[in-house]
Length: 103
Image 1 (cartoon, rainbow, N blue to C red):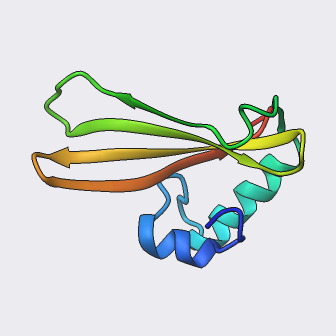
Image 2: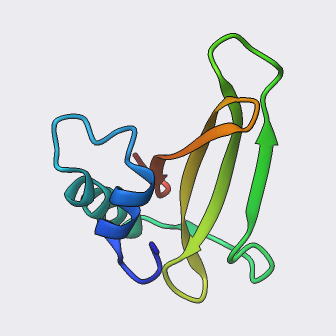
């Protein structure tokens, strides 16, 4: 969705943890554009990498973080983190942040 610049789709499906007082789709777009202005340099094998890390069991419902490198150009990408929360079968995924080299 981020590759297609479907900010409204991302906002309605996942929300955005750091939207703060901004409209969610506009916040995702603004943060993506800021990150894309200063993207990470990536090797060809990292270009569309996705890493999932699981939290130790906890009382606040943090389950996992999904880190996605989203291509901007052939040699650059931005990082998008999604956080998975919930208990048992009831899980929710939220966009946690979109970052480039500087933040």
